[in-house]
Amino acid sequence: VPGGWQFDRIAMPLVLLPLVLALQPATRTPILQLVARTSAPAVPVKYVLHSASQQANVWLSRTTPPVAQVNSDSRATEEYFDFLLGRQRIETSEDQPSVIVGGGRIGTMLLDFGSRRGFEDVLVRRGESIPSDHPGPIYLCVHARDLEEIIKQCPEEKKDDLVFLSDGQLEPLFQRHGLYGPTQSSLWLVMMRRGGKPVDGATSDTPEGLTSVQGKWAGAFAMRMGTGNLLCRELMQRDARRATLEKLVFTSAYNLVGTVHGGIPVGEVAQKHGDEVGAMCRELASFIRYTLSVSLFSGLDDRLAAYAARMEFMKTSIPPEEFPFRNGYFYRFSKMAGPRTTAAGIKVDVPDTTPIHTEYLLFAKANGFISAELLDSV
Figure: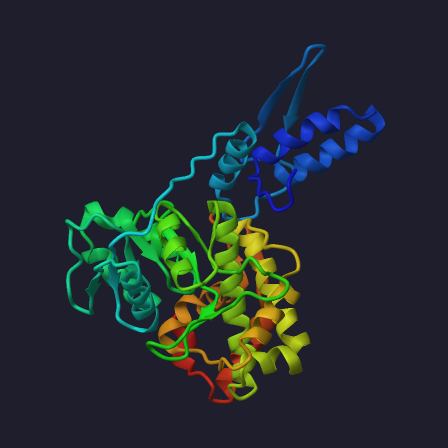
């Protein structure tokens, strides 16, 4: 199985059981018991495996209580089987006149790239309406905090054309508005000022670049980025989600560690506090693995440190308006720690899912780097 493919609690036994059943009975029994314990669904499931010479009936019964915090996404499993069966559905698109929401650094950059190709893009500023009759993509070059209102005001027939470029964890936002598989990009670049030259986040270890995009308008966006000599990989939903969550880990960990050390640049965080930020990155990645059932790419520490060294001049901070989409996303789960009673009446002691991250946030609050109101807001 290719490394990194995610399986939900139903699909994993389907892949493993044919291999296990080929073993000798003495070896097979304990493995089947392990699979039953770790991947049993809510009710017993009978798997019938057919081959030319035998039929095997395997019962998996619940032996352990469910893990209430796991949120498994079946789309990864579906995508995996599409990959195996050659049914990958990849939409193609080309750069064209587009709608750009927001005239900040990223919006201005995309406008410039479009003008180089002779396009007359439509710029939508704060308070203006998104045109319902424009056929192209709609690039949302705004802060994550502004997305809620933009989605509400967007014409229903144009919501499928939205392209999300904001940093942070946007999945709860997508779920609230019923946006399935929207076009989304994870930007690994820096624009120091409006109208300035963008710095690509590609490193010697990642010459193909770190910026990625997936969705309906992936090809159009990648082509526009290429106009400015910026690398952008078109990925399937599975890997694009991993790239986006990896950027969330970087943004949350490096900015928090840098902030508690006086707002130092990310390059200094990697150079002088590598052990601290590395431990936090691994902790946040583990949280993502066991909460969202998404494993990030291997080599996380080195890759993020290399990116930080590349962007060594970038200052660290925790903007209050972005907190709910970055560190606040993790801290929201930490606030659930403590004695709890489940819906079934079972008393459990819920541990802090990210204790290192919580410790740094509380230190930042105690030393005036962030406010108590900010922590209470999530």
